[in-house]
Structure formats: structure tokens, C-alpha cells
Figure 1 (cartoon, helix red, strand yellow):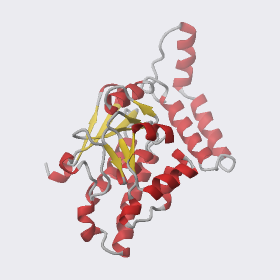
Figure 2 (cartoon, helix red, strand yellow):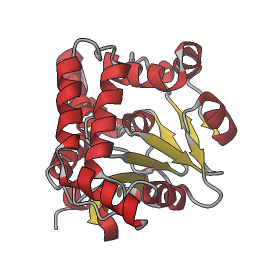
Figure 3 (tube, rainbow, N blue to C red):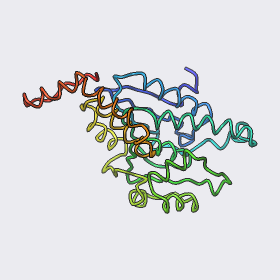
Figure 4 (cartoon, rainbow, N blue to C red):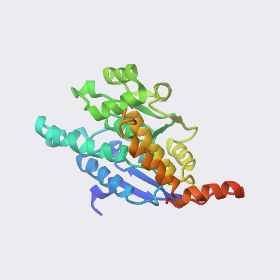
Length: 263
């Protein structure tokens, strides 16, 4: 197996939980250009697997991700033209994660900074632990973040905190991360264990309900709910016509756990 194939590991565990692991621990899992491209392909592939019900994004070696691999910038991001090509690759990866239709959880132990912070913000939830350090050092590097990354940051932490993160270029410890809502859940043990526990709340629920709820919430967040009312109604109708809807009703009446099949 080529080295670039082992830079990101993917496993699908029991009950449909997929774990995507950034696997460059010697570089604190810094993401190369080839890895940005692979992340896009991985999440598009997982999207096409209905048996995968949730995804955890994590990093090897006790670190989430130290951001983009700056050591290759002189080759792949040396001027405005190559920079735009590079940013297009990172944006495609971010959109593939953000638009994955089922729950996504970033398990952020250690550093989740720069592009690593951006990856975490693409997920539905971020779980941290006592070792977590998050931030965006763009102001130390002379970089201006693009619209997508900035929108995701602003959506998560609000206007003033987004300015604080970007202007200060600080790496915030876990208490500050929780206070700013960069981290949604602080795990008692490792972030990965906490992420597994959170995922466990979703895996036995009706997949169509979760996918529909995520789609509607994203439309609301984007201010598009009224314009896309017909699409929302179609999502609701599809769920009402599903076998899972009928199974949920039967299970309630029979006082048993429902067995959802995703259709």
C-alpha cells in the first residue's frame, strides 16, 4: 500500500459507525494536498454507503490535526494561482464533510488548529478532552480565510468569538473551547471515547429522520427554509411513506425497540 493511502485510514465498525483517522502522527496529522483530495473522495464514498450511519473524524497519536502541511506550501501554494488551486481542494473536502447527510463527529484530542480546526467545524459535533487545543493561526501566517471556513466558524462560535479566534491566532485550551462552543462535548476520558458515546445516541435511530432533520436544519441555518419549502415538504412526505415510519409506530404500540432499515 502506498504511503499516501495510509495517511488516512477508514474503518467501518459494528452498527454502522465509520471512523476516519488522519494518520501522520510524526507531523501531528498535518494534511497534505493529496490528503485534502482523499478526504473529499472518502466522504463521498461513505455517503454512497447507506449502511454507514455516522462518521467519527479523528487523528492518530493523540493529536487531531495540526492543520495544513506548511512544509509543502513552497511547491503547492507558492503564489495566487497555485493558492487558488490549493484552496479549491480544501474547499471540496470541507463541503464533502459538511454535506455528508448523516451525523459527523470530530474527536479532537491534542491540537485541532488551522485546517484541523476547519475540519472539526465541518462536522456536526466536536468532542474534546483535557488535552484539546484549538485555534486558527492565520494571522501569524499572513493568510486570509475564505468564505466557507469563516462561515462555519461564525456559525459555531458567533460574531465576536469568530473575530477573537481569527484576530488573536491563539490556541485555546479546552475550557475556552467549551465556553466559545468550539467544542460541544467535553469527554471525561479521551475525545475518541466521548465521540463513540455520542455516536451511540444516533446509531439505532431512524436514518431517514436523522437525514431529513439534518437537511432541514442546514436550510434553516442558510436562511433558505422559506425558499425551499417544497423541498422540505418532500422530505417530510418521504419519511411519512417509509417503512421505518410504520415500524416506529408498531414498536411504540408493542413496547419494544424499533428495527429501522433506512427506507
